[in-house]
Image 1 (cartoon, rainbow, N blue to C red):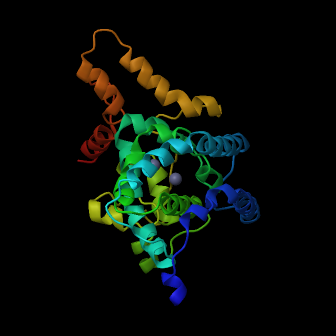
Image 2: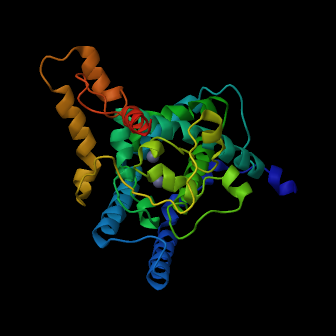
Length: 306
Ligand SMILES: [Zn+2]
Ligand SMILES: [Zn+2]
């Protein structure tokens, strides 16, 4: 019991994600064998899986190369902290919960701001939903600006090492919810935690599923902020993007939306506000209304039902 309140040195923490690779590979092989033997529970496509694994490795390299940018910003804010919160095991559990609130908003912004979506779209680019999809991670996280959402923690005196540690733990949890091998867990579990069922909805391309279930570990944030959608029993899903890329080329997957932004802002005759909106408005926004945002797609689908 005493251990729960003992002070730890977060400067000595390692990044759990940096050693999770073999664990991920083990569970992916396990899932492939499970699907092969049971003939159900999802599917794997070799080129899709290869692309996901390449994106996962590239994301890890990017963390090593550019991770210092976020750490630099958070460390500087930490230097201006108004108090000190000692790092203890119990504090890390509380931080994991509070940081999940930060993750919810970071993820929501990643869907609703095109600049951030250009980075996050990588994760949604697979038309399959299996454990390897979880590794299809963005490579330019350090450049979205969403690192700023960590600043309240740093300002309150949470050590950057502790912030990085729980952020990494959150991502490891999310690896396990990218699967069709399990249906639904007991009601209390589905009510509190983000589960494979909830995350299947997040990756689905049905209009009613777009921009829902942003949760990291706890689904309660979606329930509180009105973005929760329940998976129906035995619901057939289609995964990926509303307009799929039709490529397994990692470079195209990683850059296509940034290229799209560049092309859009380079159009002649636009006002400054329109160029600005092509970068920061929701994906699908266009100055002449020729494209659809996710809200437009939802409205159209609703009109068809009505
Ligand atoms: Zn997402
Ligand atoms: Zn996901």
